[in-house]
Length: 153
Image: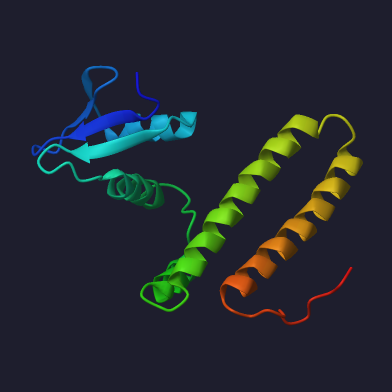
C-alpha cells in the first residue's frame, strides 16, 4: 500500500478514493486534511495532479460559510505577490510561518498544563529566535547579506 492516498477525479467531476474503493465528496477530502492524511488528487483523463485546485475549492467553501480566515485586505496583498519578483520567497515565507505556527500549537498543547507561565515565556523566546532566523533566511535569499537592524545578540 502506498503512503500517499490516491483520489481519482473523473470527467463527471466525481472523486473516487482508491483506498476505500468508493466515491467521496469534498467534505470527505476536508476530513482527510483534518486527519493529516497525505493524499493526491489525479485527473483520470490526463494524470494531471489536481490536489492544489481541490484544496483551493475546499478553502473557497470554508471562506464562504461562517467566519472567514482571510480578510479582503489580506487576499489583496497576497494577490499582489503573484508574478512579482518575490513570489517564490513570499510563498516560502508563508509556508514556513504556517509550519512554525503548527509546531507552536503542538508544543503549547503538550506543555500548557505543566507550568503555564514558564511555557508562555519559553514560547515567546522561541518565537523571537524562529522569526529572526526566518527573517535572516528571507533576506539572504533576497540577496541582502546584511539585513537591516540585525542585532548580534
